[in-house]
Image (cartoon, rainbow, N blue to C red; front, side, top):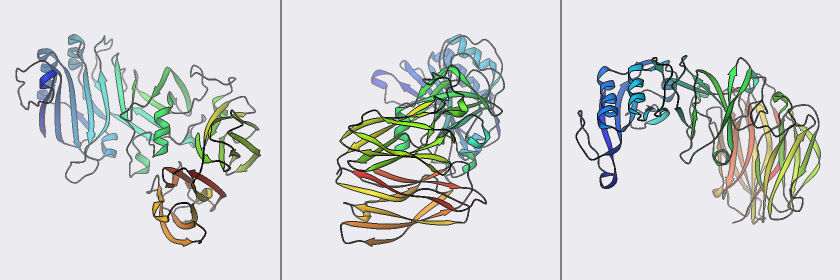
Length: 462
């Protein structure tokens, strides 16, 4: 195991690096980084006496904040399955006494053979401040995707369970950092609330709520409303152990800032997507996934830009509405359930020079099955379309053939292959010039193969 002592110097020395086993007397530094690399993976990890001495020396004698990096020689899955990373109370007492900030970052090599592909799994930050309960604490963390089938409260696809492995209370002024812009090849151990492409852009613009899970019930953590930062990270405070759910959906539980009439969380309105773009004259589909029963009122906030066409249609266990673009602009579509809960869908209408159309809205099949579908392009070549699966280890996609219609339109045929069952959907995207069209795919063992046909057009303007 190698240890690296790195100082981040202030002002004129801001770009300098000091590497030493013993701290040198240098100009005032804002932060000292202690990097411990090539740590052999183990399910439990305790700092050595030497490491703790270095951490406490910096806090006490250098009078600087400290960043401790632990680089484990293990995969993302292994690191997230760790049961303990123990920090003793003696070190916590030093943090409190000196009034400094200590950050502990946990990295994995993400399975690379030479260990060069390091990725941060999570980080704990201890700010200066009073610590009421002095005890050894456990920094190990596990994040997994949430199965909505196991909860009575509604959870969206992009939710993640954040399970704290420690059982004691954490010190005050403790912050947890979770990165969200990376994937896992193992469906059962997805490490983050994962977002892809336009979903990531959506996540950056919206607030997320934190709930504590007990069995199949959720309880809102008071005042816990967060936004992703520019580094694609969530930062929030956790005071006790347990399992938490981070979700972009306001579940309308007590204290979560509900704007509805107080309906139960199990009846909150959920959509398959909350934004869309169409060209003038084209239609977009709004798929209501929950509640699965009852009636809905769908209204356009700007009827000169977009209008709702007809009523709802039962689709794949949900209800689908059509909205047509009329003129350039933005309209917020409000979806209200008969139980009084509501949510919104933002539709952007643009003048169109071309479009991409996909012939399927959603599809379900079992592992080992295949499904062929068609993408039609107008005003663009087949070479411009980019088709991919959000979770290729669950359902992959490949091109089969291209057919030139001779009227400016090109048909491109694709095949989706189901590999593994999953409780969460996979999205198959076809994008051209920044505009997306997609199919929602569910891979379920033993399910009868079938889906919903559509003419989903997405328009682009250049």
